[in-house]
Image 1: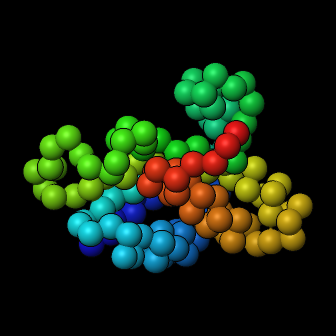
Image 2: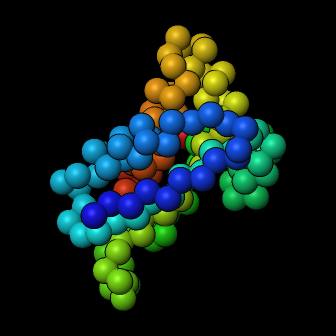
Amino acid sequence: MISVLFQTESHFPVKKSVVTEAIIQALLGRVTSAAEVSVTVVGDRRMRELNAGYRKKDYTTDVLSFPQHDASQPMQPFVDAPDGVMRLGDIVVSYPEAVREATEENKLVDEKIVELVLHGLEHLLGNHHEE
């Protein structure tokens, strides 16, 4: 079973079911046990705070990922979780950045949010790109 914990600031209209389904489809066949991932949609001010606090970059960004494990190591937990759930980590998306990028790319906002969440999910799974 794949669980998606979803939180958004109340004034951001995000289709949670679309994002959740995209994550589930992306993880099918890639995880062999129960898995959990959390997604939070925030504003630019909060995203800038997170980016400054964790990456030392004092500007907003579109997506951040916070893995529950050391991404430089294989996806093997140090110990098995007592409930058998592999917690992948947290994905945070800036709604205003998603809107800006969707406008520039002539996409629907929810489509862009799904793209950003799946990008963040790849980071949680240990797949990274050069900065």
